Image 1 (tube, rainbow, N blue to C red):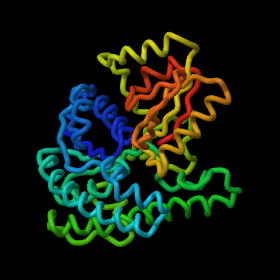
Image 2 (image 1 turned 60 degrees about the vertical axis):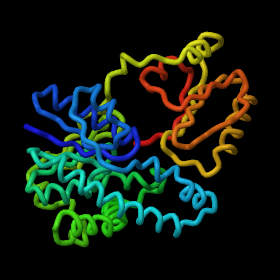
Image 3 (image 1 turned 30 degrees about the horizontal axis):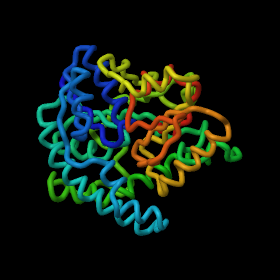
Length: 329
């Protein structure tokens, strides 16, 4: 079977789907990953077909316009910019995805490629399988993951309602962009107002969840068509060579802390860097600080702190004393 996995977003959004694709390839399928150009080498090194789509989520999150709006806390303006960029991206993703998925037998996507995946599957008359990294199917066992799990328990009906509301909010936020792509590129009628989660391409197909039931038990009211498979991890990058300066830093003192905020955009990176450095100074800890998308930068770092733009977690985490991380999925 020829399978196209649509994986859009940050590395944390994309890498698990490359691992899923690798598992499907090992099972005998031909797998194409439809994603951003900056992940080409990661896809190719996993032995999968790579197909680029225009646009990079990081470029939008780190743009001067977005940073200015974040700094001023202008929520309405931020939403306007996000919608405008989503409309532009949706058209590009539809154009590129339409070509990428022409010869496929099955489309797969999670939250990053969900809505464009629905539309492409409808256009090309292909089955569409949903595959998520966080709980997205409504359940009475706990509220939607966007809500604090420390909320007082308000019962199973309330929990299920929060999932439905979250799914609708996500869809309504992207619906105008989706309809633009459907009209301009795919020659399709507008998608339903109440979201396409149960559209024809998904009928009879399982839903996959790439997390561990040891971390989050499978909800008691999920059906037999929903499968919690365990995490989709890639093997450690065997050909990755750390910089000599990093090796020297690790070898010249006690194991450091790792501090990183992944793809979380930071309104005031300098202030965040100062806060981190103050905490390290007070506790006498060494640290490796990942700048990531947050753009953290500090011109004069003490000898006890090493900053790096990107590093494989699987290589680094066994070599540090503790991890301070934004969490992601």
